[in-house]
Length: 118
Image (cartoon, rainbow, N blue to C red; front, side, top):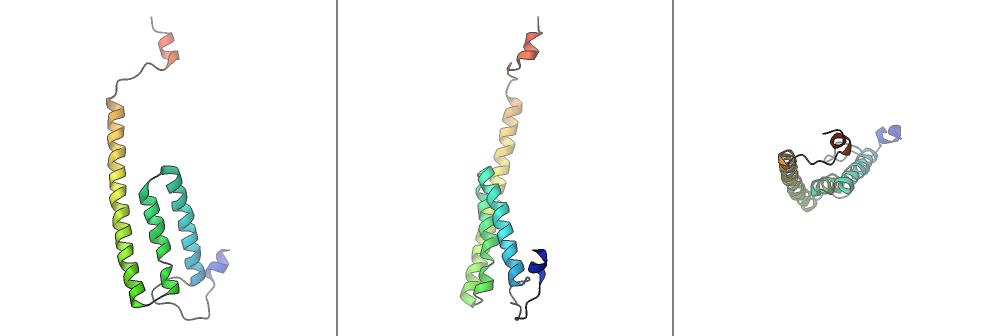
C-alpha cells in the first residue's frame, strides 16, 4: 500500500499540494480515521474541526480556481482557530476538574482500609 501511495504519476503535479493525488488521498483517509476515533471517544469538538480541516485540503486536488482557494484559505483559518479555542477551553475545564477532585475530601469507599481501622 505504501508503494502505491508513493508512486509518481505521469501527470503534472498540482502546485497547491505537496503530495501527489494517491498520497494526499491516503493522508485524508488516515486523518479522518484518527480524528474520527478521537471525536467518538472524547466527544470534543476540536477533533471534529481538525478532521474537517484536514479533509478540506482535498479541494486543491479537484479545483484550483481562485474562489475555491480563497474559500479553502478562509475555512482553514476558521477551523484551525476554532480547534485551538476549543482545545484551550477543554484543557482548562480538565484542569479545573482535576483541582476540584484534589480539593474534595477523601471518601471512605475503600472497604479494605476501613475494615482494619479500630
